[in-house]
Length: 180
Ligand SMILES: [Zn+2]
Image (cartoon, rainbow, N blue to C red; front, side):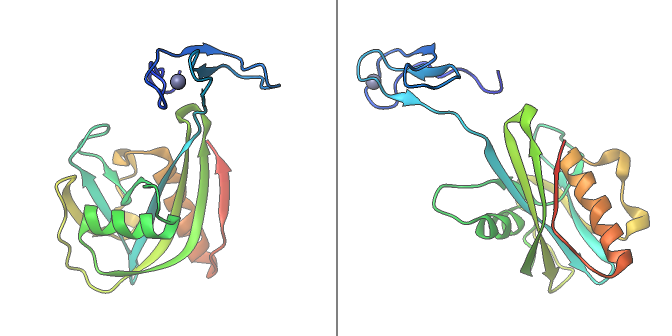
């Protein structure tokens, strides 16, 4: 179970039951016995940026659980009504208070055991001044040799950073799709 089970119908509030709907479905869903609403639970998107200033990358030290005190690229859950790029930009603003221009999509990483898909866009920083929000202890720039690999909060971030540096060495960036 990736998330806590749904208890009540989103439509009418009646207690739901988990069962395979009799419409040809093959998975158990939270089905409402009163109004027959079927509640589909799907993966969430986590979207962020790889903010770059010359040869350095911006990382944020997390002031929230999970992985408090570890370093991450600015990223967070997509909100309804926003695009992936808008989410990446909003999270970069909220977590780092950075000035930047959003660039191309760089990585798409499925994390099925967490029920998530992580996407990272490249971004070009306009300055080295940051104004981190409450979710961030510290926002700072790292060169490739300074990256604290043992203190990176999430594998999606370390996999993205490794591919970023590899592409940069080759002088061209492509989109990386992977599953972890
Ligand atoms: Zn209902």
